[in-house]
Amino acid sequence: MTQPIPPSQRPTLLQSRADAELDRLREMLLEMAGQAEELVRLAMTGLADRDASRSKQVRRADDGIDALEVEMDERVLEFLALQRPVAGDLRLVFVTLKASNDIERIGDHAVNIAKATKRIASHPPLPDILEVREMGDQVLAMLGDALGALVNRDTAVARQVVAADERVDDLRRSVFRIVVSYMLEQPRYISPGLEMILVVQNLERIGDLATNIAEDVVFLAEGKSIKHAKLGDGA
Image (cartoon, rainbow, N blue to C red; front, side, top):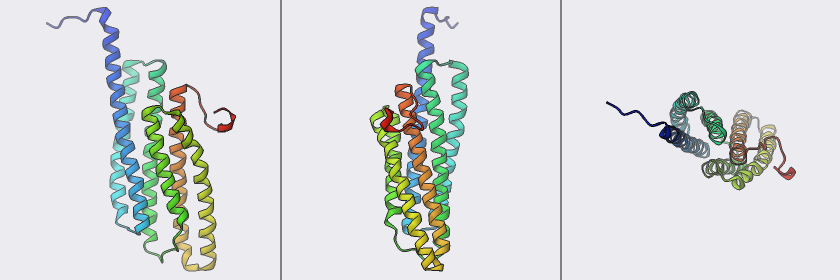
């Protein structure tokens, strides 16, 4: 017959179970993050190569991220119901749940880029726009840094990600101006130009989502929100 757990050991046992479940949630988040980062990289490679076949690859890979998000939601709800976390653990669960949603949306934006690439490939190629490549590199760097900051609770790196988002916004505006000038000069660039605008809009949104994750790192580590606050105001 199973021996009852002494009352003095019950809190320790419950905490160890909670810690194990939190570790599992972190592992799942890292798995989602790695897949999303690779998805964005794959979509941008397809754009650079005008490779329409990448669209299906990206969409298939996104299904895996969606499945992980659903499992994450279920595990978080179960954890909240059974463990009743407080203070730091509750903040970690909140940030994990929010980050998983942001990562899932990053995957969706990568799919949008892949779909736009497929349509772009059927039109005459636009002149090379270096700003699009720089924007993709910047967004990928922000995403990697934000996820690394989340793992390490590194608020210094998180704040760097928040600051870097301004550069992404500048690049988007620059690409818009360049693409519109091409469209005005050559009507054959109108259709691919519109698709390229869609691409950079999705890149900007990925940058915004990476920024969201970085802001949540500060909330997790310091217990304060820096959303909508300027870094120069003490954020």
